[in-house]
Each structure stands twice: as C-alpha cells, then as structure tokens.
View (tube, one colour):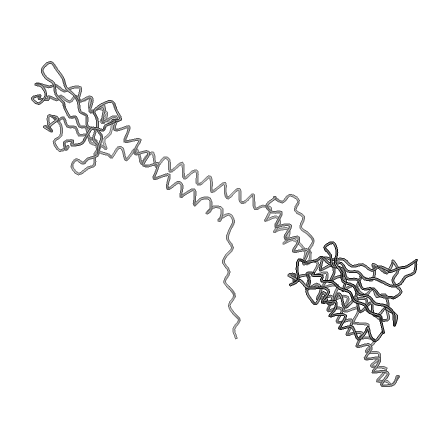
Length: 477
C-alpha cells in the first residue's frame, strides 16, 4: 500500500510582505480616490480661472458697442477690438468664438455657428454683472460659453445687447491633466518612500527575532536551558517566556525519563540477579525444590511490586501533563480503598476506625486511589498486630485533609524528609522505597502538601500520622 499523501501546507507568509500589502493597499486606494477628486477639483479651479477670462473678453466687447434708436427700435452696432480676444492668443490649442446679438436673438457680429443663448441669468450671480456660464458645442466640439447682457446707451439711443464668448476645452483639460500628473508623481514618490520605510522598519524590528533564531540554531543538541534575551523588545518577551516555559517542561520530561530509565535499570537489576541465583541454586539441588520455588516466588513478588510502583511513578508524570482532572469526593475514594484493604486489616487484627466528611477535590481517580492506598498500606505494615489504625477525612479553611494514623514506632527527624525520595525505604527488608515517593509526586501534581508527624504523648511516641492537604473544589462532578 503506498504511503498516504502528505497534507498540503500553505507557504509561509513574509511579515514584510504582509506589512507592505497591509499598508500600501489602503494608501494606494486612498491615492486613487484622491486622484479622481483632485482631477475634478483642478478642473473646477481651471474652469473658474478661464471663466473669468471669458467674462473679461465679453466685457471688453460690450464696452465697444453702439446703439441707434431706443428700446425695441434700437439697432446695435459692434466693433470688436483685437484686445478683446488677446488673452487667448498665447494658446494654439484652443479656438475662440464670439457673438453679439440683440435681446431678440438677431445677430449683430461674430460667428453665426455659435448658437444664441436661451438661458436665464442666475438669481444670485457669482459676479457683479448680468452674466451666465454654460456648456455648448460648436462644429461638434464642446465649448465653454460666457454670456453677458450688456446695456448700451448713447446720445442716439438705448438698448440691450447679448454678448457671447466661447472657448474650446483643450487648454482647460490639458492644464488639469498637468496638475494631476504633477500630483501623481509626488504621490508615487510618497508610496515609494512608505514602501522603503516599511522594509527598513520591518528589517530592523525583526532583527531580535532573527537573532533569537540564530541563537537557538547554534545551541548544542539537548540544550534546553532558558533563553536569555535581556534586550528583547517588549512585544517579543511573551514569546521568549512561552518558549522558556515549553523548554522547561521538555527539560522536566527529559529529566524524568532519564531518572526513570536509570532507576529502572538499577532497581530491576538486583531482583533479576537474585532470581537468577535462586534458579541456578535450584538447578544444582542446593535447596529443596519447594523451598526454592517459595524463594523464587517471593523474589518475583518483590520485582512485580517494584515494577508496578515504578510504572505508577511514571503514570503520575503522565497525569501531570494531561491536566483537566475531574472533581471527586475524597471521602468516597477513601472508603473504597479501605474496603479493598479490609483483608489485610483483618489479618493483622487491627482496631480500625474510619471517619469521613464530603471533601470534593480535583484529581484523576487513579491518582487519588493510589495516594490513599499507599498511605493506608504503609500504615497497615507498620502497625503492630492488634493495635489501632485510624483514617480521617475532614475539611477546613479551603482544604481537604486526609490523616492516616498508625500505632508504629514513628520516624526520626532525619528520615522524615528522606522518605519522600525514591528508593529511600524506612524498612529495606520489606519495601522498595517508592510508596511515599509516589505519594509525594501525586500530592505535588494536585498542588497540595504532605507531612509525616509523630503522634506523641508526654514525650512518648504513640504512632505516626501521615497528613495530606489538597485544595477543595467547588462541587462534586
């Protein structure tokens, strides 16, 4: 069967490209919108400027008019001076048209192809004259027209003339486009400067990331010590701290694995060597067959207990990494464990008492059972036959407390801390030294504390109390 295809992964995106796209796209969009707006504004400004020129020409023509007759009988005479059209002489791109007519539309002078004005003077004109501006066409070309109603009065008559001056739009559009192009060049320079600044700033801002990457790549294999970057930017420190936390957890797992392999190889070597010696002795008939089998069985039992305890110690670390523990009632777990060990309690004829109250704690059931079982089993082993054994589960000040009190000889101060270390057995002949170490690991995982205290009366040791304190949870799941 061919191997399954590798999942498609998207190529990594460059931070520089993201910033360039994220910054330049909005800037370019704003420039495009601004370009259209600027073009219309420039065209409007050019239109206003050239409209004033058209009005000036119309006024120059209107000042040279004569009239014979009055009102409806008035006859307009026009003499258009060269100076009236001189303002347009410098430009060879545009054409100029003019027309002088009576108020009724009768042409007096000018270009007949320029249509007569039929509009209205604005109620609030822009200029202090009877003037109107509008767009029209001459010979199919668009033109801008200024029309002026010019009163004409002389000694020989009085009337009203209509003066029209029109100009094609090439010059206006050319000037507006020139303004637009000049602005676009400046805008393009601005975009180039922004792009260059983004590249430089990103290059400088990501320098600590590259330095961190180089430092990690240069580390020897297996080096999980915390990263020291005292000059890292504030935004990069959460990443460094999170990386250090991950590396710390990896270092803890690696140390635990190394310790487990070391302890397993060391501790299992002894019972295996003893077992091999016992088998060889039985094969040589050095001991009775039944006695040899009993000795082999006892060795296998001790090796089995040792292996189970070492696996339990490894499982505690697994549960520590797993997290998400449910809420359990410690009192129910304690009663179940006491019932499981009832045969051992009865075998040693112990005066056993159990008092519990509901005590919800956050823990995996296996961890809570293993903790309670190890403490109770140790207490049963160290209780003299027919003595008293008490187990109490109570709660106070936000904590649940388990107290397992035996009637044994107690422990001295030197043993008290050492017993929580792996393979530090108080009784080397009857224990592997892992029971209390497992309890200590479980309690640490559950964020609690454990203590061994001698129970005394008037200076005499009456027994040993193993006390475990765990944080109470809200309710029982």
